Length: 480
Image 1 (tube, rainbow, N blue to C red):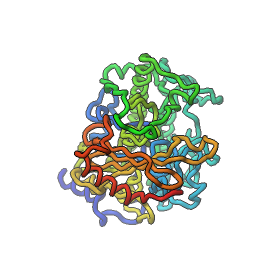
Image 2: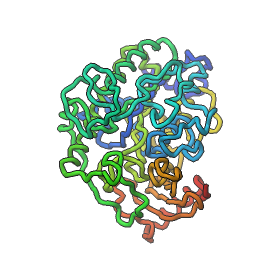
Image 3: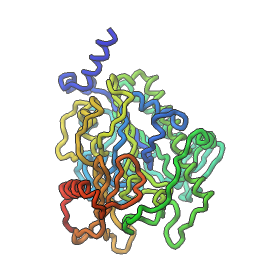
Image 4: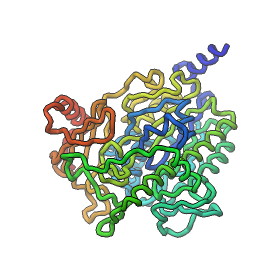
C-alpha cells in the first residue's frame, strides 16, 4: 500500500499526464533565496551549524555544481527571475532595473500569477535599491514585504521596527537580541503569516532572506553555534599567474580607495566567523518557515527551492565580497525538493545555472512553456542524479566591477567565464572591440582553490581547447 502511494506521488510530479491545467491540481511553490550565500560543502552533510539546510537537503537534491550568471545582486536576480542571461537583458550593475530595458519581459512569479497562482513576496527577491523602480509589483498578487531596504540598516532593533536612518551598521556585531531584531527574523514571521493566509489557494510564495550578506551581525546565540563548526582554512594567496583584471578592490567590505582598510588578523577571524554566524541565524529562520509549511498540511503538495543569488569571498584570493568570475563567487547553493522524490537525500555533480530554475519550476508545475528562456529544466537530474542536462555553466562580470559609478558609466572589460566538469576558463574582453585582453584557466574539478593559472600549461591544452570552444559558442566575441 505504501509503495503504491509513493509511486502514485512520483507520477503526480514527474509524468505529463498527471497534471491537469487547473491550478488546484498543481503543486504549490516555496521559493527561498539567501543573499551572498556561497556554496559551503560542510553545511549540507552535517547539522550543527545549519540543521534546517541539512533537513531540507535530506528531502531534496543538492546541486554541488550550481552557478550564478553574474556575481552581484541585481544582475544575478534579474537573470534568474527572467530566465535570461545578463547580456540578453542588458543588466550588468545594480543601478539598472531590468524593466528599464525589458519593459515587457516575463518573470518567474508573473508566469505563475498568470496561470492561476497566488504569488507573494516576503523579503529580498528582486534587487531592492539603487534603482528608481522598487522590486516588480506586477509579478505579485499583493505588495512586497521588507523588500525595499538597505543592508546597512540591518542592525538590532529590539522593538522589531526597521530603522529610519541610512547610517551604516557595524561591520561585525555580536549582541544578545531576539531574532526579530534583524530583518530575517521579521521576514520569517511575515512569511509564516502569509503562508497561513494563502494556504488554501495554489500559491507561489517567495521568501528572500537578507543574510548571510554583511553586516556580519546575528544574535549572540548564533555566534555561539559557530564554535561547533569547523570554519574552513583560509588560503589568501592570489592564483599564480592570474591577470590583474581578474581582481577587484573589495570595496563592499573594506571600503572604497583611498579610504579602504587593511584588515588585521583579528578582523579576518571576526568577519569570517560572523559570516557563518549569519548563516546559522538565517538557517534558524528557514526552519521556522519549514515548520509552518508542515503545520499547514501543505508540505506534501509543495515544491521547495532554496538557492543563493551568488557566491562570496571571505579573504580567499585576497578578496572580500563578490564581483569576480572566480569559483567562490560564481558557485551557489541549490536544493530542489519535490514531494515523493525518489532521489531525496542525494547530491549531484550535474552542472546547473540559476537561469535553469524558471524552466524547472514551469516543468514541475506543468505550466505552459515560456518562449525565450535560456536555461534548461533540471527535472531529468532530479529523477536521476547521475544525469546531466548541459555541458557547461556560464558566469560573467564587468570591469570596473561597479562601472556604473565611474565617470564614463561604461565597462572597460567584460569577463566571460565557462565552468566545465574539469575546470574554469575565463576570457577578459575589451568592451568596445571584443578583443581578448587576458585569459585564465583553472583545474577546479574537486576544489575551489584556483591556485595556478594553467592557460599556458601544455598538459592543460585539451581542457583549454574544449573550454574556448564552449565559451565562444555561448558568447561570440563582439564589441559593444
